[in-house]
Structure formats: C-alpha cells, structure tokens
Length: 373
Image (tube, one colour):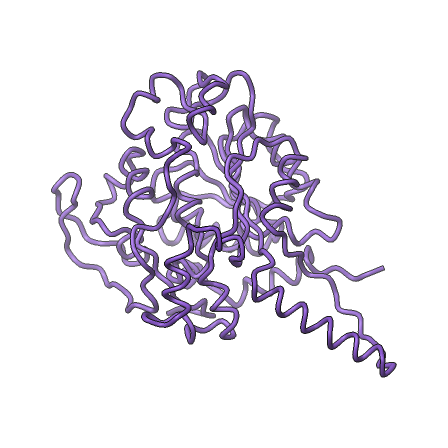
C-alpha cells in the first residue's frame, strides 16, 4: 500500500512552522487567484476557509468585514493563529477541524473556500466535497481550487516517465515515492464538483504566470516585467490558453428552488436567477447596479498587469477615494491590493469592497519567503 503524506498533520505543521502570517500576506498574488476568490466570497452569513493554514485570506476578508473562520487540522497552527490574531488586533477565528467531518450543521454556511486542499487525499476529493455541500445553505457558494496539470507539469511528468522507463530497462530498483497530491485538470475538478451535487457555474484553468515561475524553480527569472513569460501570461490569462495554467478553479452553487441571495443574504433568490447571474440574486438586488458584476456575461479579471517584486509600501497618510476622509495606510496589508485608495471604514462596506474586487485589484507577485520580509 502506498504511503500517503498528503494529509499528515506533522508534515503540514512543520511546513507552516517555517512561514509566518506576515510573509504569507505580503506575497499577495504569488498564487494568482485573488480576482476569483475575492469576487465570489459571500459578504453575508458565515464563510469558512477549509484547510486554512496561516489563513491569509481569512485575515484579508476579516478586514472587509466578512464573517469568516479558518479551519485546519493542525492544532499547533490554529492555536498559533488565534494568538497571532489576538496580538495583532484581528477579528478572525481559527478552529481545529477535519474537512471530511466539519463541525457545522447542515445548510448553515454561506461560503466555503478551499484552496489547494482536496487534491491531497489519496482516495480522492469526493468525501471532502460532499462535506462542503452538506454544510452550505441553499444558494451557498463554494470556491474550490487545486493544482492543475499545466504545460510544465505535463512536460515534467513526461520526462519522469522516460527516466522511469530507462531505469526499468536497466533493471534499476525503483524507489517508492510517498503520495503527496494529485493534479486535477479543470474538467476533472468540475466533474468531482458535479458528483458532489454542486451546480458548477464557472470551471476553468488559471494562473499562467505561476507556470513560468515553476519553470524557473520558483523564481521571477521568466516573469520579470517585459519578459516573454510575463507578457504571455498577462495577455492570455483570460483566454483559452488558461486551461494550461497552474491551477484549476471552480465557482459552484448549492442549487435549490429558493436560495440565499448573494448580494443581500436573504433567502429569497429564485432558481430562475441563475439563468442570468453566476450566483443567486433576488429580484430586488437584481435591479441594483452592483449586480452587473455577477451577470453571466461579466468578465472576472485583474485590473492591470502584475507588479513583480515591488518594494513594500510603508504606512503613509492618504485620502480615501470613496469618502474623502484621511487615514493611515495599513502596515501589513499596504494598499489592500487595490489600485484605489480606501480607508478601513469604506473597505468594510460590501458594495465598496465588491466594486474594488471586481474593478480595482492590482496584482502583486512577491516570492514566498520563510520568515518576515
């Protein structure tokens, strides 16, 4: 029987011990899915990030006033994160739990985020996805991503297969490699979501830039501004070539005749709303301008090309573009990753943070680092 370390608590506790919440936040779009995650995370009701680790999205969304909780199976990690959030003034909570058996009632959550988690089960992702479906309320939104077999992974696997064949021909004794993860193509992840009962509203490949990062041994050698990798990935991220990106992502809904409205949280969105919108939207909210971001024809994208390894932004006095009030920029979240200036008060208003997440995300790539910047 093959040894699996994909869900070994000790492996992950050790991994997170070498990183810090500060460095995880400041790498921003090193894993480039923020345009999808921030747009489709519900603003009403409770959301969980299942397999949250150091919880950079839990911390980020808590700044937007979103009711979000991180769940991880490592006790040392959740204990450490709760102490860190308390010491640093965050209104965020981390709980120890198992994504295969979550401690939430049926039909209780508005949102479920899982980023690079379900591919680590050697038996497959089905049980974890079925549990996600159970805890979501009707109309609840699941944002799920996994690594994909990008053109680099396809090349790497082919090269490994050739090496293994040669070793077999020369009777070289093959060493067993412990299982860590699968790579699911967009079509595979979509099928798993459908099997779990979800209505997959968006299923696609993403993050072409990370492919070039992998090719350069996780450096910016091939993605510095002006390079081929940089220009290619920024140009084609929203085109058909994105299917060969480093990640697969799905935006899915727990469909029912009556659902929770994404824009107001009330249980009054009809199933017919999904004919026009990606997420459930009630009739009243469907008449609001902000609902346009969620029409099936709307494009989800960053607002500009990536900034590669920019210097850290230190706190400074600014004027909010929304209310005109003065404020001091955040020492950890810098400009919150947006091209517009926004004060903490305005950031916490759902209409404003939705607009920012749909129109003004400024993607920043900084290499993942151990320890503080």
